[in-house]
Length: 437
Image (cartoon, rainbow, N blue to C red; front, side, top):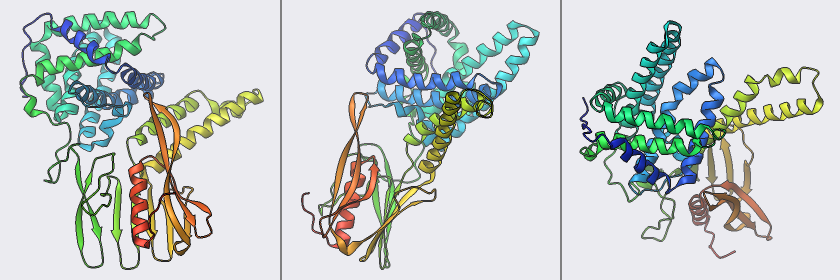
């Protein structure tokens, strides 16, 4: 059984809530929007029986992402709304959280049948499951523990600390009722505070004397010393005669090696062959999960609300057009999700041509350009609005031909480092002298 502490102070619930409020007010917009996305998913899902099953199945996954974000914020690390989807990036934690979700689905079924026999049994099952998942989810997400072991440990720790947890649950219930009064808008503040307070309860019971057990990421399969960001990996650069291992660092700012060249960024592969060079850029990232969630919401709405039946009915033309546009948008988001999950951009550079291929899902932007007609390459930044008060940009890798005509090589790159790295490697391979454009 995992080691945990007994909370002797009956006023611990008050301390948890005050600490939760203190953490929330440091980044209120991020926490509110994170909970808003989570709440929209939950509300949309629970309208049908299948939706309730999906909600119960995935709720621990989203909750795990929130708890890891809270832990990072508590330790002074930066957070973003995308942290909500962080567990999807960790297969080991995702598997364990889905196990908890599966048990949650069973609990919903038991609760449903218990309601037929009386409310007391149903209330007992709900209360027991809350105690089991209260610490069980953060144990998996923060301490990288197994699902069943975490649930058992959570129950054991909850019973030892039952009185302060009971006081906490009563206060939390009252706050939820108050937050629901102004058309539910108050919940956008109350729920993130309660999430943060639950984390501090978990911290009091598990982390205060066990910080050395914390494992925010899955155990790595390599032994490199991590860099300042805590991420390391390896990438193979192949040639006709040798294979060299280069580091991929989890960094957003360009790093330059001793030769004045940009180091290989995360998400990019570089391979040299006899007659050409290949650069491969992976599309998949945290944004994939944001697109996936949006696609699920859009398609759930038009399927559950009978938009197809409206299209085939004799309803007004304007309503039918709205339904058609909504369905097309939903299907388009599914296509976009699949593409961002599976696609890679392959750049083949030889002395004669540069060929761009986006595969395996068909996507615009495939092109072939004569390499001997390129005068210069450069990166152009485009403003895309703001996010969390900060400007957001995308980047294009453009080129100029010998007759001074401009062309696009790769568009809509989210990372300027990727664009600069690709530009530098192509110019070096083709012997193009770099100058300011």
